[in-house]
Length: 283
Image (cartoon, rainbow, N blue to C red):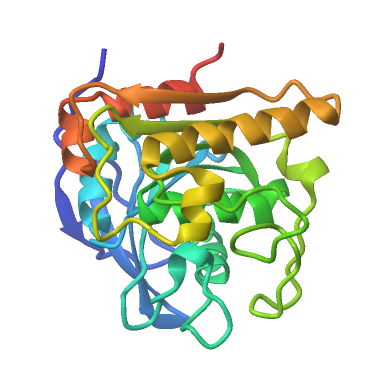
């Protein structure tokens, strides 16, 4: 049963050395980069051992809504919540981590945010994070997982429009072949295929809307809607992990009563419960 707490938005008023307030959602601009903003929530019983949960918005950039909708779960499970805000002006390519010549690197920005909140909350690094993303945010989350598997514990993906497949014959972002658009970044299947992953898609999310990548190549390789694409990606990740002798859990689940909408998936489909159960419950 979800514990509903009195969670409100507040302006950050404490310094890095001060005692951070608990049980409220705060917004913060990174001291080293004022263009980078994020929301965070510290549960009442936050400790140095508390896990970090990162939730990433889609192209509507509703980071504050992500923070508000997930904060009660963060309180219930005692985890620190981070919801980065990747502005369109500075992070136009955040879904694909921020390729060269397409704005700032969103992957590096998230790492700076994690360092910042860890310092504020007194958490020791390095620490693996638990990730969720919706739509474009799910594109970011799974690509971050592929690129930085040693930093990620588990991932839940909410209805990505398309995927990077574990295919060494295709350049990023279609596959995991190294690309000059992301200098110094390599992908190691023996590492990222160890990360438990769940894909959640609304049962009514079959529309080919303007947000969906509709290229013929993606249609042919991944399917024509988010349900087909999610099922194919999970099947491929499962197959490749088994070929390496791994037993990593991969799951695809339909969210009942839900179209392609973060708000409705949370309200009608129980996406919050499903996300936190997969990430933090002991199975």
